[in-house]
Amino acid sequence: MENIALADPAAHLSIWALFMQAGWVVKLVMIGLLCASIWTWAI
Image (cartoon, rainbow, N blue to C red):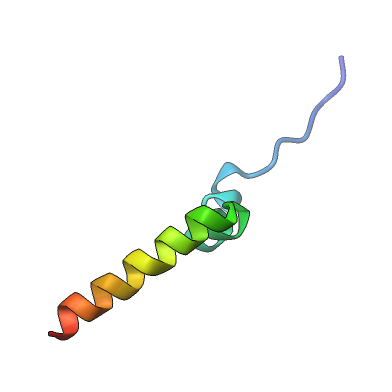
């Protein structure tokens, strides 16, 4: 039986890694939500 090396699951679950793997629509929504959050807290 072969030994299969498993990747570290925590290595691919960072916010940046998830953002970079997302589609362009999801990225656009996330950036919009971030901007709205900053705008709301700035008021």
